[in-house]
Image (cartoon, rainbow, N blue to C red; front, side):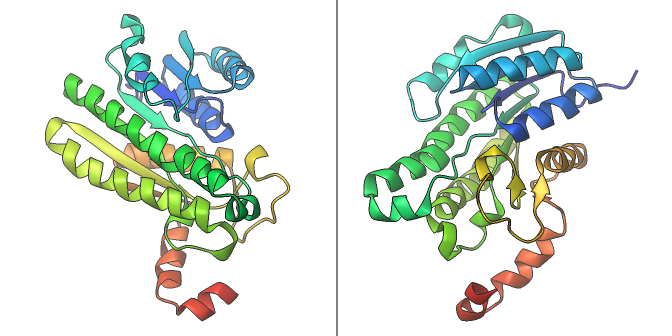
Amino acid sequence: MPQPLARSVLVLGGGSEIARAFVSALISSGTRKLALAGRSSDSLTAAEAEAKRAGADEVYVAEWDARQLDGHEALFRALPETHLPLDLVVMAVGVLGDQETAEQDPREAASLIESNFTGPAAACLVAGDFLASQGMGTLMVLSSVAAVRMRRENFIYGSAKAGLDGFCLGLGYALAPKGVRVMVVRPGFVRTKMTAGKPSAPFATTADRVAEDMITGLIARRRIVWSPPYLRWLMLAGRALPDALYSRI
C-alpha cells in the first residue's frame, strides 16, 4: 500500500467547507490521524463525523479562535501524543464579511483584518515553530485570488488576504532551512455558505475542486497553488492591465 500524503494532519478552521472537502480527499489518499480546530462547535462536530465515516481512525477536535492569540501555543501543546509528529498543518481560516458595512465602521474593518490576516498570521508563526521543532512538515495556507489585485467590491477582505499571502511566502523562506515547507493556496470565487447571496464571479469553482487542486499541489510540492490552475495566467494578465480597464472588467 502506498504511503499516505500525510499521516497526521492538523486543520485550523476545520469546520469550513473547503477544509472538510480537503480532509475527505486526504483520507482517500491514506491519512488516518486528524486534528480539527475551529470556532464553531457544530461545524467541528459535523466535520468529525464526516471524517470518521470516510475512514479516519483518530480524530481530535478542539475549539479554537484565530483571533485569540493566547490560544495558539496552547492548541499545539494540547495535541495528543498519538497525533505527533504532524506532517501537515492547514490554515483554512477566513471571513468574507460585508464590504459596505466595513467601509462605514472602522471597528468592523479591523475585525475583518484581524480574522483574515493578523490572527491567522500569528497562528502560522506558532505552527511554523512547532513544525521546525520537529525538523519537518508542511504548512498549507488558504489565501485567495483576491489577494493578488484589489477590487472595489472587496478590497478590505482582499487586502487582508494579501497581507497573509505575502507574510506566508516570506515565512516559507524563513522556515525552509529548518526542514519546513510553506504552501500558499489561491482559490478563486468558491461557491460555499460563506459566499451564499454574493454575485458569482467569473470562473467560479467549488470546495471539492479546490480540494483536488490542493492535493495536486501537495503531491507536486508547489509553493503556490492556484484553483482553478488557469487563474494563474488570467491574474498575470490582469495585473498588467491599467486600473481603469481592470476595474471595468
